[in-house]
Amino acid sequence: MNTASFHANADLRLPRYQLIRDDLVRRIANGEWTPEQALPTEADLCEAYVVSIGTLRKAIELLVAEGVVTRTQGKGTFVRRPRFDSSLFRFFRFKSAEGQAVQPIGRILKREIVKPNKAIRDALQMEPTEKSIHLSRVRLIDSKPVLREEIWLARLRFDALATLPLDDFGNLMYPLYERACRQIVASATETLTVEQANQEDAAALHVDVGSPVIMVNRVALDFAGTPIEWRTTRGAATGFQYQVEIR
Amino acid sequence: MNTASFHANADLRLPRYQLIRDDLVRRIANGEWTPEQALPTEADLCEAYVVSIGTLRKAIELLVAEGVVTRTQGKGTFVRRPRFDSSLFRFFRFKSAEGQAVQPIGRILKREIVKPNKAIRDALQMEPTEKSIHLSRVRLIDSKPVLREEIWLARLRFDALATLPLDDFGNLMYPLYERACRQIVASATETLTVEQANQEDAAALHVDVGSPVIMVNRVALDFAGTPIEWRTTRGAATGFQYQVEIR
DNA sequence: CAGTGGTCTAGACCACATC
DNA sequence: ATGTGGTCTAGACCACTGT
Image 1 (cartoon, rainbow over the protein chains, first blue to last red):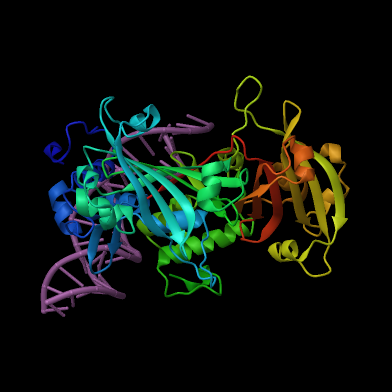
Image 2 (image 1 turned 180 degrees about the vertical axis):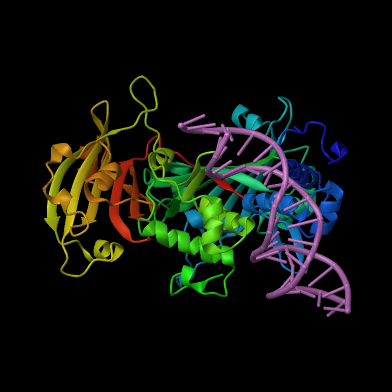
């Protein structure tokens, strides 16, 4: 295979399907294909990387297993957008007054341009003097607050959100990031802890002080693995239920 | 391919690699290979199922992805024992007085032969009149209790544990199940909820009444997918930390 | 050394989506 | 009808494990 096909840092001792997988990830991270566009066909990629169909398929199957792309017979191979909505719903089971599972509505309460604390600055790999956009957000069901969210974004990366009217933010953040700032969230890491409600939590979430509160910290990454959003979400632990499979 | 190779219920419209995967799972569930024994080689399985190596590998790769088997170059393919110890440690981060990560010691406090309540009976697929073995267990670090566990087992399946002296139970349950009852835990589902400590929790775990307590319900299954153990574990939520990747 | 799984080839034919 | 991915073949050679 032509070594020129690969990034300079590629370790050519690795199997070819690994090299191809890494190269495709790099190209996706570079924005060569967006979630709407199909990747080249198997035949084209085989030709470009000078490998047989079996080797190429193995590379792409890795990406499918990692959740980076999806394939559909007859249509093609597409960069996958992670399904975040289903994620928090695995933690918090929200129901409307009628008992229907429902998605909470998001509303921005406050926006400020501030220097983040060190933990957030490190998590977002920001320079010491760099400023961030801090959003306070609440999520409601039947107009009742069920989640409190604090969001931090690097000012440089999300400049458009520093001036956008709060009414134009809409219900969901990640489509907004794509629309206004061309930032695509590709994956995230969430860490869950339990705390006892303080005065603010109690007032905002309508629970007793000291009652258990779930806290979820999330760092969202783009396709290159660069952290782009830091978020912490709090909700009453009542009715919270999380399920895992062990194998 | 010879249809006689497969179970009567197999749907022959499925891809061959799926049929082979299902057949191998069935044979593993039947105890044809235990975690120590290697499965037949690729060449033998190709011959037995009358498929080419590529198709057989796809079947086995499914099992690897599901965590049912592991493969080692030069050694063979082996039925995998799930790594449970790492599971609860992903939830509770235990440290000894010296700050070292450590595995708590298990001690059985009580054993009784009782009819289980309906929820447990249903979870374990037991007959209405069937009796269960109920174990109360505590797990200790530096002689301090950190987890309370209640375990239910079907009496018929775990008969040897009804009479075994409590001192012979040892530290870990799943090796005991294998040793004394030939029951191998192959997978499990855990559900996590948060509660407030009641009097019993507070006394047993040395926390305040009303403080948050993590409750993990676990149903453990054998290779055939039959539920064999119902377990609920409670521990103080302080220091509890759980992490997920989202893609 | 023999035996195992790991990588790779160069095709074939099928099922599905779209025009 | 054309183009896509899905399934499958019948090998080859390599890398690792154990004797």
